[in-house]
Amino acid sequence: MRSTPAAVTLAALLIALAGCSATDPAAGPTSAATASAPATPSTAGTPTAPATTGTPPGAGTTPAPQTVRVMLEKTGGLAGVQDRITVEPDGRWTVVDRSGASRTGQLSAADLDRLRQLAADPRLAAEATATPAVSNCADSFTYQLTVAGRTTRYVDCPTDPNRPEVTAALVDLLTRATR
Image (tube, rainbow, N blue to C red; front, side):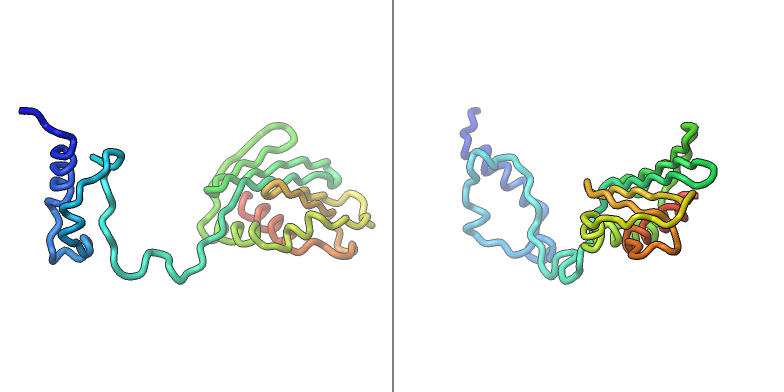
């Protein structure tokens, strides 16, 4: 027995609709025109998602900011520290010290959420374009932070003016969470 493309299309459509009923709220409304209309060859056999009713998931809420890779380099101090912290978008982190020794971990959900908020803060972009002041301290730690291709830098000196607020908050978060 030979099948025509229209018959195959109609059979695929009927198979897809076989589990639906008029009382199934997840199936959504159907009409005779929709059920009997032949599919185009490009959609034949392609599964379709059932129609939904009500408010879509996440509607009316602000989506969580997405994070890109965040990198922090801490250098200086009396001992000549050189630590590199890298945090992946999913919260996995790696710390590598100047000797090449490394350790890894995972940010907590709360720390990852805070990281995402700070990384999306528009003040961070402004801090990246600002010229840092010359530091009054010797042997202090210098922090260089890179987020989404933007780099900020400051010397951790309590007497220096204009400490970059969002950058410092990210540095504090990363150094605490990756110990």
